[in-house]
Length: 55
Image 1: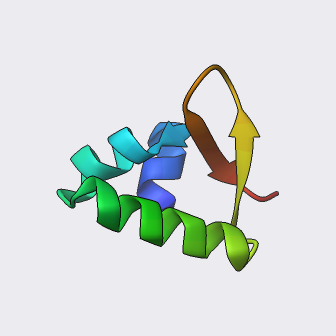
Image 2 (image 1 turned 90 degrees about the vertical axis):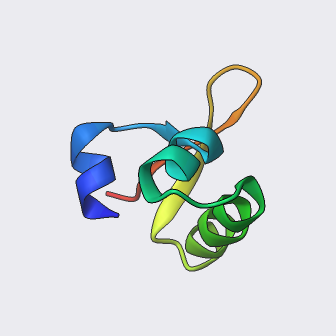
Image 3 (image 1 turned 135 degrees about the vertical axis):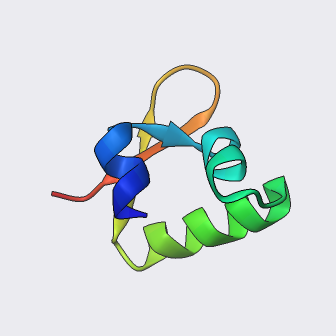
């Protein structure tokens, strides 16, 4: 996860899917879980949910 954040400051479900080769359902579950644990945060940039590391 740190590697994807270092390469891209902001990422989406779609970029997570491609990077980790998982389904959209898995990416949604994983990222929503990380938001709940406050390891990443959800930010609003356009239509899609975007995520970045909590700093």
